[in-house]
Length: 184
Image 1 (cartoon, rainbow, N blue to C red):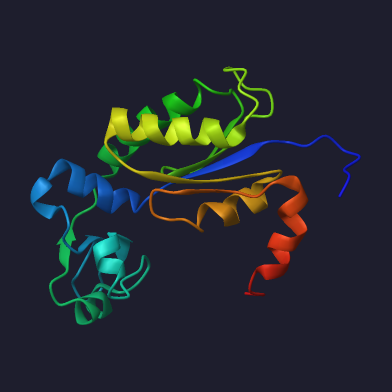
Image 2 (spheres, rainbow, N blue to C red; image 1 turned 90 degrees about the vertical axis):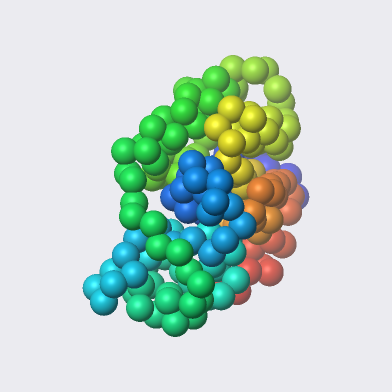
């Protein structure tokens, strides 16, 4: 399909189970265990869940009581937002090595426009891979990425190969890709 408009190269980087992953990074005893950041008491809410907890159906915004019922061995950890912000700033500094067009959405995700990037690399997919490798090497956490021609498609693509993966939707594949998505 020919395009008569400039094609942008957008990367959506999404940290994998960010708050829970930071807790596992800082406390190796939690590694490989079902962890929920948040409260487990009557009025507690899960802010984030490790992938080990997600296997049991534990999700963010879920009540701590329900999360405990779904996963009896769930370990609740109190949030440390100062620490999450500290790690987030390290990750953002990596982004700015590639482009000045960084749009953070929260502490754990951002859009990067690498159409005209600082490295001169024409491949957004290779840039995304390098960014993910640097995050792991320099910070110790995994990230997933989606790459496409706009923010919406990049965001949807970043969820496809989670955790620690990436998915590129090339311009000619956008319409067929959209047609495969569930209407929800």
